[in-house]
Image (cartoon, rainbow, N blue to C red; front, side):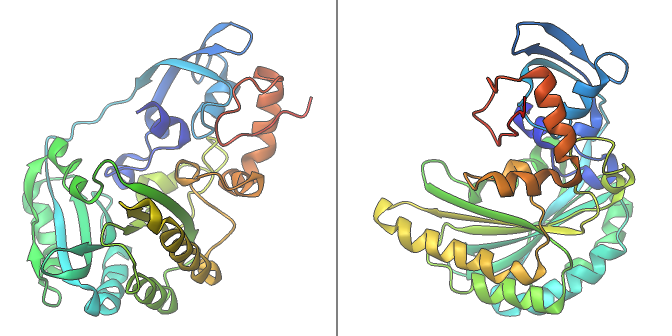
Length: 314
């Protein structure tokens, strides 16, 4: 929860309630010089700004106070289609999601399913009255010829775990990610054709849809700046045999490179690996210089540097 929030905090309620960092009310922080500070909208407001998306660069956060929202039972689950129909499914999904209410937060999962093969699954959480949700998603569930439909009412806590099986523990991992400037037909065709060549059946890729409450906060209001994009892509190559590392890493980089025509210079900091200063700058965009100023103030010796680092300049 700590790392999620400090980096921004994408989740299944972002269109209805914003990011995790948008719902942070205060944080207690131990700074590099040993001070114990409370940061909120009034006390140490500059530090509070930096903690909401700027990561653990300014101190050790020892407690968080959040604004909570009732969730209760939600309508959630995936509708799964063969990857062979992926392009038409994603075109429909793009148009459907563009007019969906804020209660509907969703994404498309590319994966390999036993006895089916490569698939694209449209997964979502509808955080509103179940009856309203069933009416909203009826067209989505009726489109095409899905091989499975696991949509059902469930506790929000269960929705948080509904795709956990696609991320088993103990595998080798290599990630690449980017926001998308648009989800054009060409971008959709690229996603489908690239995943069709996936070398490992454990690998997944996710196309995440944004907007709603997350977008109604100004980019400069918190350290998390990238609120204008409709989508991002996260490619998560996973494999079990270390001897397969080069093959899987090469494939992931090629997939990422193929998305460059649709990719702005922007990335979600929580999805970054060891990718260099340029990508860290891309994670913070126009907010980068303000983060440098905070680093100069709160950690001028760069004690907290084992992160997606913003180095001080003093």
